[in-house]
Length: 125
Ligand SMILES: [Zn+2]
Image (cartoon, rainbow, N blue to C red; front, side):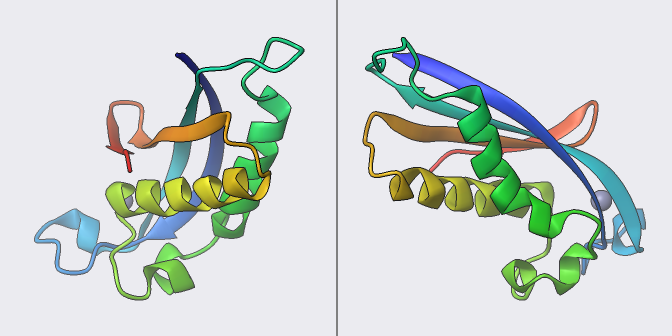
């Protein structure tokens, strides 16, 4: 099996409702997102997917979040915009874009969302 990953970043503000500490206050992060896909077969060029194609798909999902107040995004109307919920949101979005290509050769494996260099959450379906 092959795995391939791209990294995309964005900046946004959020607050974590119900948090007992400082995270309840409005603050921002420069998020780093690592999207990993997997596949068993290579195409005629020897790839499971082109890095650029995957990055474009990720941007389509992530750009609407860039420079926003995440708590007001429709995706987070019900759930706090934690790193965990962001990872699941991005996972489902990229999964949908991959399905739209019609190919079954490549599948999403995981999405890791870094709130800082040393703190991140990963979602796997
Ligand atoms: Zn935060």
